[in-house]
Amino acid sequence: MTPNVAAVRQLQVSPHDANADSPPMTAAASERQAELAALVRRQLELLGETPGREGLLRTPERVARSLAWLTGGYESDVRDVVGEAVFEETHESMVLVRDIEMYSMCEHHMLPFFGKVHIAYVPDGRIVGLSKLPRIVDVFARRLQVQERLTEQIAAAIEEVLQPRGVGVVIEAVHLCMMMRGVEKQNSKTITCALRGQFRECAMTRDEFLRLAHRGT
Ligand SMILES: [Zn+2]
Image (cartoon, rainbow, N blue to C red; front, top):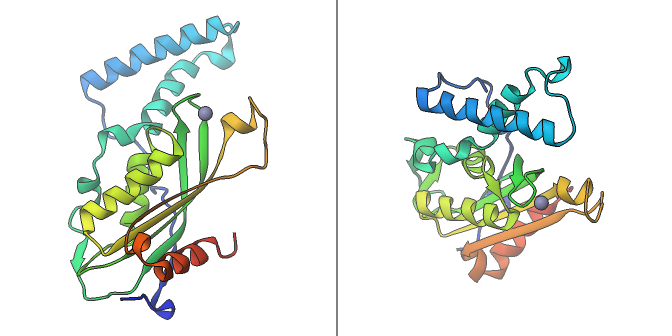
């Protein structure tokens, strides 16, 4: 079954949660945060800073909180995120959500990499609420990552949840570890792609996805 271009649905969805406030912390979590903050304070000293100066007074706590949020994906699970939002549906054409904003951190330097994710799948009797796709991206982006693994994990999660005829995921991202340090390449973009099922087997499906994913970028 070849998807019909006219039936492809395109949406722009922002993955930002309207409410980014963290839920109340458990005792164990607040102990971890305090320990992390102490390490950040020590890190500031080792960098030659004076943690006691005014501008840095609350920095260790802020960094600890921020890191906990940026790596919150370790504590979330695709099944929980998707919840009840899988629906029986006979739609058999490609569903594409493109330009999903993605922010992650490279595991080699703990520096951000960020860009856009394009996700497509060809359903086989089940579709997922479209707003869930950006949430799935966040489950894996909010961890220490490499872009290649992030791409594969998103594809694998969609395959597991929906068992579709095929899945395609493309990520285009820039890496601060390349831009600010090392090779200092400010304009290079890294593109990774994971294709499964029909997206791997059928050239027409794959070409259509890649053409739509890269359109206007
Ligand atoms: Zn890096």
